[in-house]
Length: 531
Image (cartoon, rainbow, N blue to C red; front, side, top):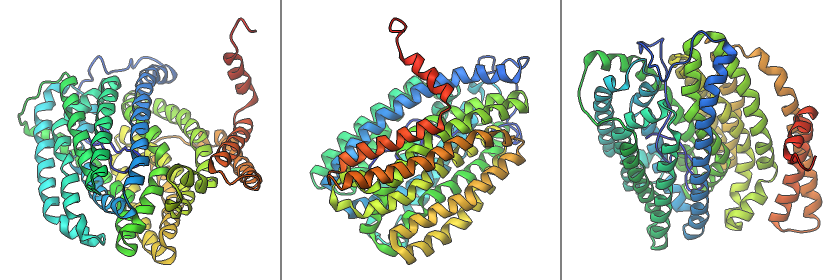
């Protein structure tokens, strides 16, 4: 089930119904496309983008609904747990979460990707793919059971060992459901995936809060997560409509591994990127400091988790269908998608960075105040993560899985020493600075380079980014000014959030959105009879 999503209690690693889907073509997964998945190759590039866009739009609406539902649940759960538990509990969970996120990225060896991208009947590859997913998940779990004490010791908290062993057990569920989850993604069956994820999040909240109230500490997170995955997995198996059969075809297995292995390697490196800070901060500063860092990272992950996860449900199937036709279809789809993503993410990042103290104080109370400085810096990483995740999905859809490996590897080579130096230099804020700099100076340029080498034309995107960037600068200035003015009148965090945040967002919209577009939106908002 391999979905990297979550909520306040642990955005990096809460798992749901599905995960990233993969690549095709260049690595050998070929064959006749299914009629119900194929796009008419005789249409123009614009027509193909429109057709796939309509399917993706329906899937995206369901994905957004599901992610909002799960995020609301986990957000409320996080608020409750932040008051029932102490930072050390969050720190122990963060160590287990780091291990779990890594194994969830690599354990199915690209099987979900293969199911989404398969160029024939899924029923032909499902038995072999199921056996492979189960075998790899079981083997990887066995390895991590053995190495858990060493991993926990490396992260600076040997007492996290049993939590690591418990939480990583969710990959066994992932192995059993990988092919069925991929089948639902392939058919844009996001309504069923949404319902399964929401059911799992409700179970997670009920179990975690109950255990935390009874003194279970870090086990509250882990037990809630395992219970949630069990419920979500059972629903995916029931609703996929794909018979659960086991078998093994050597030719199918070879084709799966030819492209799945690079994808798994790339995702494994991505997991290191998103969790190296947990290990380094925990080892250098201890579990209490790691608890503050975890909370800040989770707040900065709200948008990547809600919007990014919803997009990942549909970007790979959508871009994959475009890549099947002609190269200009994929480039056109990317050129339309990137400016929209940037225009949405930038104002959120600005408000998060400028009003971080108010956000933390209002939601979690003064005992979590050290997290505010980290949150302001991680707002930069928010934008980087959204763009690099989109680039990863585009490359995967184009069949350029090796490019994803090089992109993430370059980022990891820069990130690990930056985190280590930053943490020793300036504590948890230094870790956030290292993360942000590595993303801006290495990850984004690497993403642009790899997309260009894959044949995606990015030059037409640049003019569309000017207004959002100028709007972000104006929004930051307005937000800071209003926060200072309101702070002189009242110390209430909620008042400063509402006034300064609303003012900054309004300034952004007025500059970033063209006047003609604003008039069009205004006309739609006014009922016909009123006009």
